[in-house]
Length: 222
Image (cartoon, rainbow, N blue to C red; front, top):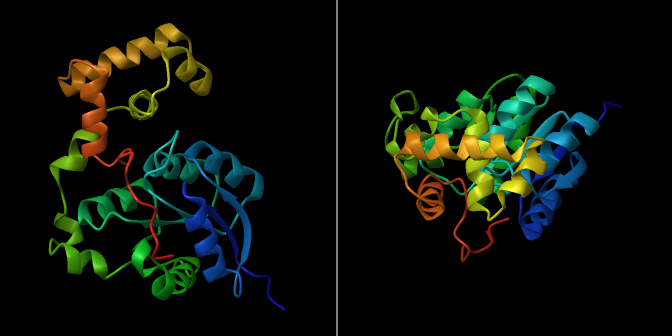
């Protein structure tokens, strides 16, 4: 009997994790569930799953940054299961190394197929991206994601942690840096983005999908 495909799940909403697990349990082996991007990178290295199914907007480390790190560290296929229907996000996901991209509202009907598709070495893109946004993937470029390309990976990490309310000292501990180095990255962030304050950084992060609004409801489609 063939070994079942091993899946690692990542989402910061426990209810979504449970919903996705129920979809997959019958056919796959769900080896772990995590609720933030840094836990995802650590669990992937420990568990070496065949496929990682992850949200894009994650605490501590954005899903795109986690994906970039994972492609260097493990051989797992990465599928984004997200609420972002904008084709620019899908393009960014594939550029980061993802093998699949689908929306949470279609998980029940598409996720199993997506997993089998990426295991076979092909890519999977939900047709709903094209229904919601009629820009072909190869031409998909939006200002809301393009500005992030001006930032280094470390600057994007610092940005996310700042807007999540972490102090300079807390960020230094999380990233294993000195407080002085963190402050340097913050200064470069403000200069690069032509912003003035933490409040400006928060508005930028919200508008670019790095963090969710505090009132954002839990996805119920899973």
